[in-house]
Length: 447
Image 1: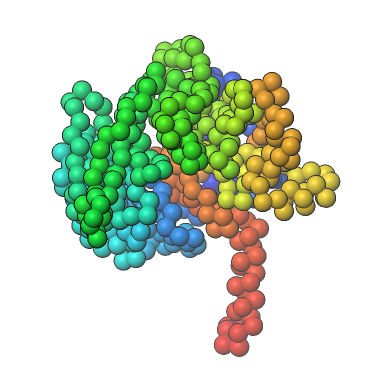
Image 2 (image 1 turned 60 degrees about the vertical axis):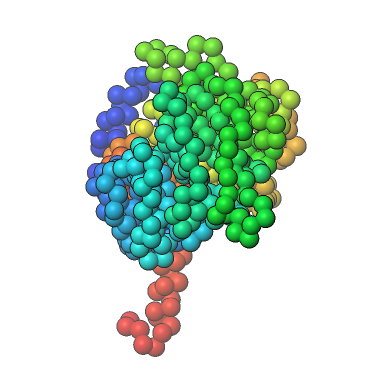
């Protein structure tokens, strides 16, 4: 760990020490972290408040946003800020890419449309009457939907096509996803509601005349929904702070399975220790869920409870984000305790096994180092537990989220206002050697 990293970890370590009294048996990484390739850091500074969002643009650019009301577009190769998008008056709540534009929504009741290449503001949409908390694109169209107190349908030119008013007794929409057949699933408090976007027939420009209507309200969760994801074309999943995960069919909008059902879910002082904060799905089969300060993996195709992996205490505080590296080698978790942790299996002592798994194009095989047949035999009584391979410590507050950029590393953001790129040191060494070799081979270079 570098001196810079140690300076940045002081407050985070203090928090971890106090949290150890509350959550026992949280392991420490091995000395030297021999299996952690991300040992170089690049710190990007521009934000003045909590950074909550990271939006990948391409292989080398990302946009970050948060409570300082600004969006910064970065080149993550060298850490340069390319554009600063200013205009919102209050914190930015959500951000998506829609074709060649960036859409940002804010608690200032507006949506802004930005050019993805030069950062210019193209449109300001002011029709919402309260904070805008969620955005989602309609696939294969120029349409997008925004949600908050009401739900609105727009085209990319900023034209409002439809507004559906919601009652004063309903909570604001906080999460939305797009599923098959131009349907939108929304989450507001404990409730899931499905809407349909329908192009009007007999018109050349169907997007302009599209309609949006309510299809169905689904059976509610016991507690507030914090995560909603598309699993496959045939199903989606929702998770709530009581720990329950519900798998829904996309066709008839009925619950298909329930995972992680807990009876006494409130815990001491009603802190909801089993809260589902984040989920993602791998291979349309394996559902990864952040459960309180731990995580679980569920096989949604299994006939029983589907649990194949459980780590009860992975961090000292609740996990805020969970994800996988692009090649499937590692799983990452970020937490309120200020750390990012790297999970997986160390290489085998058998070179042939390592070569076989490294060449596998099945991410779950690479991550667990088990064959597909071995994975099928896993169940609640025969679970796997990934090993802690490394820990990233540089943020001085909660790590809100992260995005994997493959060979360019991991980009994270946090409550300390920092954006950090965690670089693979071996790959960076190769890049520097090539750069030096290029300079030396150039007759005009200075040696």
